[in-house]
Length: 134
Image (cartoon, rainbow, N blue to C red):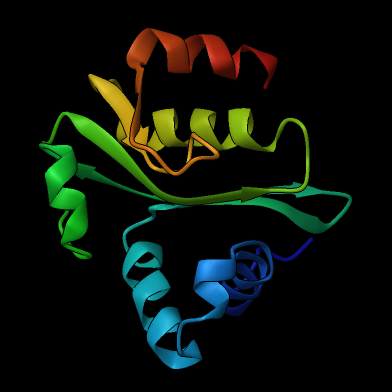
């Protein structure tokens, strides 16, 4: 199977996240490209199809997440900007990919881990436990 393209990832996110559908396409693609260039896009496949996508970056405090291009490889938190999945193992597998990409961090956090959109923080040990299924 060919690796997914940037456009495939953009289509998947736009089809699964209503807030991303509302964004202008080119602006959204440029923003995803910023993640793409630094290997901060996680993708899970099943039977040749994308079934899960995640955009993540490292920050020092959750308040920095309001700055759309804030990222520092030395920061202690992995901010999960967007995550979408059609597969029951999609999220755990994306978290496992993120652990491989970013290594040990204090926690993973974002508004995406809660259906209400509230900020949620997952300590490192919790993330490890969640990725046992992948």
